[in-house]
Length: 103
Image (cartoon, rainbow, N blue to C red; front, side, top):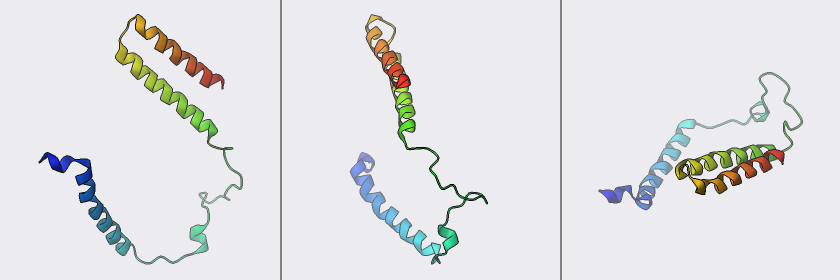
């Protein structure tokens, strides 16, 4: 019975199931009719903005990297216990977070 829980066999079982569900859903959806209004931007009744809201993804990645380091660092420090050996990882985590904040 444990063989059913192995990832390769589960993949081989679910692959035809997913393909069948895809084609059944495609058949139920019906034929679409292209329309210029369907492909235009919708801004809840307002004119769509012509410029990007943010210059790129860089600010997001800096914040995401900060929180990833913070959470993983706290996880490492929390599982290590309170002793002298954890001073170096704690200091490294603080320095890395300060470097990310200051840019």
